[in-house]
Structures are given as C-alpha cells and as structure tokens.
Length: 301
Image (cartoon, rainbow, N blue to C red; front, side, top):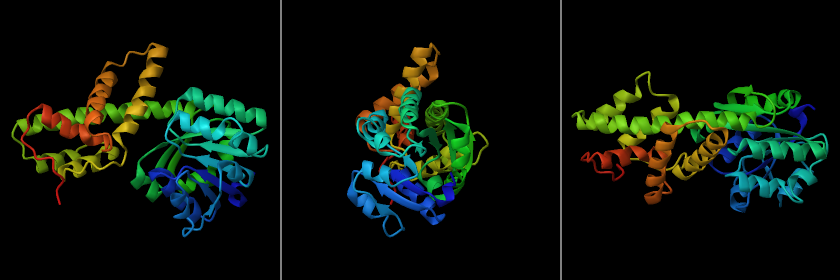
C-alpha cells in the first residue's frame, strides 16, 4: 500500500490529535476526522480535513485509520462491538496511538487480524508543542511491513520513529518512557524545594537548573513555566496518573519492584486530589508547600 496516495482517517482530536492531524494535512495527505465533540472536528475543516459523522463512517472511507484517545476504555469503545474493526476494509492499516496497556494493544491487533487488518500500536513521546512542530518520537509495535508502509505518515509528524517488535511493544515502551517522565518530575520538584530552602532565589534557581545537563528537554519548559507559576495542563496530572496506574499494574503482575515510581505516584495522587486539571508539573508547587517554602503560587501575569 502506498500511504502517500491513501485516505487517512483520524479519531480523537484532543491537544495531541488535532495537532497531529494538522501536520498530516499540511504534508499533503487526504484526511477525514471524527471526534465526539463535533466542534473539534469542524475546526479542522479550515485546515483541509473532511469530517465523518461517525467512527464507522470514517472507517469505511479510510485506508489508514489512526486514533489518539484518552484510555483503554475509549479505545475498546471505538474499535469493539460493531465499531471500527468491523467497518474497515480487509487489507487496511490501523495506527492506534493512545497510551494504553500492552494487553489492550494485543487484543486490538488480534481482533484486527481476524478482520484482515494490520494493527500497529504507535505510542507517542512528546507533548503538544512537539506535536505542533512535527518533532514527536513514535514507539511502534506490530508488523514490520505495516510499519514501513506508514513511514511517510510518521515522517510528517515526528523527528524519529522506532519499530520495537510485535503488537504491544510500542505501548510497553511508552510505559517505560512515562515511568522516567513521572519519577523525574518528582525528583525535580524535591530538588527545587531543597534549593529554595538553601536560599537560592527561585527564578534564578529554576532558570539555571533548566540549563543543566541533568534536565531532559521534556522537563525544561516545565521549569520555565513553573517560574511563572504556570501549571496549566499540557500533560494533565490526571493523565499522568492514568499512566502510573498502568505502570504499577503491569509491575505488580510481572513482579517488578518499583519503589521510586510508587512514591512518585502517591505524590501525584495527592496533588491531583486538589488540582485535577493542572499539569503534572504541579508537584513542584506541592513540594514547595510541603517544605514550607514561602512562595505565592498565584500565576504571574
């Protein structure tokens, strides 16, 4: 299949999905979209996308079906029953990009196989700014030929993409990546509180720390936003906690000891109980509060 000449259907137009669709449209692909919130789909008409009235209708007119959804239940609802899998034509490719359990990815691949579909789990590393720039990292599991067929699409939305093995490998790698993401943010939050208690001026502390080799690109902007007391959600703490749930469930089932991840998870849970809609970097403010650092967390104007 030549993905350059195919119709791409995209389901799920949240902060990531909408930006990915814009990149795909701008790369010259024909794209049809669906979202439960019709206004989100309508907003992409000006970008050049067409709007499908339902996931089933989208599947019927698409050669490659892509999705970026909130969780396992949302993926099962879209693809299961009489949904996308049964509506898609045999020989087509599904590129499922949600952060879900590897088991759900494998179940979806098996259901697709019975229909004659190739299903890739292609997890995303990177937030909305990187999606807008086309600088994401993609982590794929599934058939190698299907992965190669989709490379022109991947090249339009990412700076690098990796085939990691059979179905479930992409979502498994995403759990590995997000373990580091969540644990590192908690470590940063503790270090920031320590620095402030040691007497380093907060803005200078956050700026200099953001420039050091120990801070990953994913966290650099978080520190600069924290300096402005800006914890508006780019990656909501509720979604980070959903991923922590997946991580800890898999760790328990596989008997992998993860004491540091467990501690970071609990700090996230505590923060989310008070501020469920903010970014996961809000643990910085939480550690400042716990350490009795004298900081006003009112957002800077």
